[in-house]
Amino acid sequence: MKKEDIQNLKIGVIGGGFAGSTAGLALSRIGADVKVYEQAPKSGEVGAGIGLRPATVKLFKKLGVFEAIEKVTSPSDYFEILDAKGNVLNREVWPHLEEGGEKHNTRMIHRRDFVDALHSQLPEGVLQLGHRAEEITDNGDSVTVKFTDGTEETFDVLVGADGIKSKVRALWSDSQPVPAYAHAYRAVIDGSLGEGLLIDDNLRMYLDTETGGMIYFLPLRHRGENGQISFDITFPHPDTTWNPNVSQEEVLEMCRNFDERLLKIIAKLDWATVNQRAAADLDPQEQWNTDAVVLIGDAAHAMLHHQGQGANSAVLDAGVLADCLVSEDSVPAALNKYTELRKEPVQELQRISRESWDAESAGKTAFPEKEKIDY
Ligand SMILES: Cc1cc2nc3c(=O)[nH]c(=O)nc-3n(C[C@H](O)[C@H](O)[C@H](O)COP(=O)(O)OP(=O)(O)OC[C@H]3O[C@@H](n4cnc5c(N)ncnc54)[C@H](O)[C@@H]3O)c2cc1C
Image 1 (tube, rainbow, N blue to C red):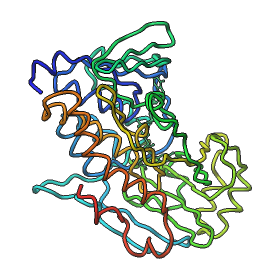
Image 2 (image 1 turned 180 degrees about the horizontal axis):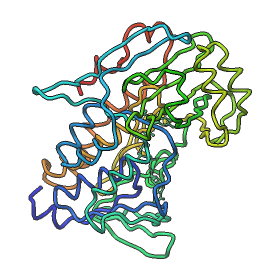
Image 3 (image 1 turned 90 degrees about the vertical axis):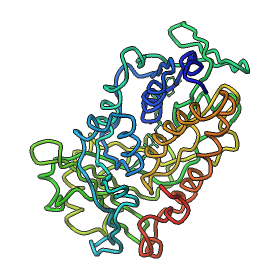
């Protein structure tokens, strides 16, 4: 689309998480009149870390916001998978870490720092906190949104970045989160409580092949005097309650096969600060857009966290959406092109993430997606 046409586009983004905030950045960079509406009055991210992959890092460099993100991250070279006792099953450098003579290390980041860094880079007035979309009407070539504070806005394009339980998606889909019959218990702890395991900036995943339990040990060495560790225990569990309440004793019992240093870390966790969440994803969605509405991030393709690709995919969606508005002739063509480009790779990641890990797959490669996805 021509620059003047993009400048005349009024775009509403529902959700100010990783997808929506990146969309706010990418769409404002191409000149659109964009606002991001987030229901929370302030950042409410849970205490946990994630890894921003090389493709995500490259996008942030392109958008000119990498410096702000770099400041609150540590650079990682590889992902290591170990068995429950700490024997290495696989160690692989992050795909596409070095390209064009430049390194784009995966960056280890705390979720809250990530959202705060993205928000800090949004132009003045783009982020509208405390705005919950309540009623959405797709008028064909525009979209009207009523917010819970009684205000109403009409947009040329509405971007649904409102997560796995998306209200925007409900315009055409009755898909609900699909329980994975697994729990994630997550905490961020001081490096001094790491039983000597915090040795560098690389992500480690300990896999108990007997029970299917996993411990993700994600270093955040740039945080605090001693560095910090994002410690994430994932276990099969029949309880599908969204926020389960499992005791420390029960988790210790589940984790009995793990290295005793990991057991000591669990025993010392302040259980009141541990975030408990039932894992869930979405079935692949047939429809991602209409002529004026488009889904990005978890709203379109929530996936299980076993490949660490949900947030990364959400961010990349936003970049591709902005590119498509520039490259295509009209809004409907741009939204269709975006769906065409993103649906296949992301649905492959959803599929692989559902497969989770076992000794055989972990022994083969740390990145099972790389045969089909070239970024
Ligand atoms: C245990 C666990 C571990 C994970 N680990 C990783 C990892 O290591 N790497 C990785 O890449 N991904 C990981 N993920 C996945 C990642 O968290 C998600 O894919 C990512 O948060 C999706 O971002 P999003 O912006 O699409 O959605 P969300 O983060 O869900 O954000 C949606 C936003 O929309 C807002 N909202 C919702 N409804 C409304 C409304 N009606 N009006 C206004 N605002 C609204 C919400 O408040 C929220 O801020 C993990 C997920 C889990 C559960």
